[in-house]
Image 1 (cartoon, helix red, strand yellow):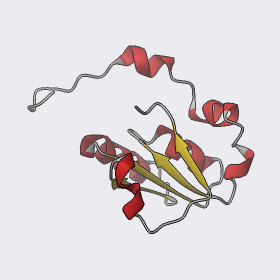
Image 2 (cartoon, helix red, strand yellow):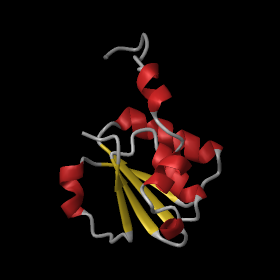
Image 3 (cartoon, rainbow, N blue to C red):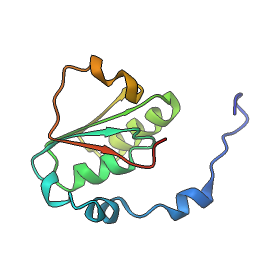
Length: 111
């Protein structure tokens, strides 16, 4: 949607998503996150990036091609004072340009 009137949010999809900690546990990586560097591809609102940060990841980088989603994620990171999370504007196919290396990469709820 364009313009400044509003933004469509599909609450039915948001309501079906599990809690970040539950989803990360279901993937079997919750224990591995402690002290790890994590890349969250298609981070959107940063839900899993924040979950990884709270699970003890050393550093979490969320990437997404949507600047509005990243703006919201950055605001939330500031509000929650999560200093080990950052966000970058990028699509998954652009990741080869990154010089960073990560211990764990997450790709969830992303087409």
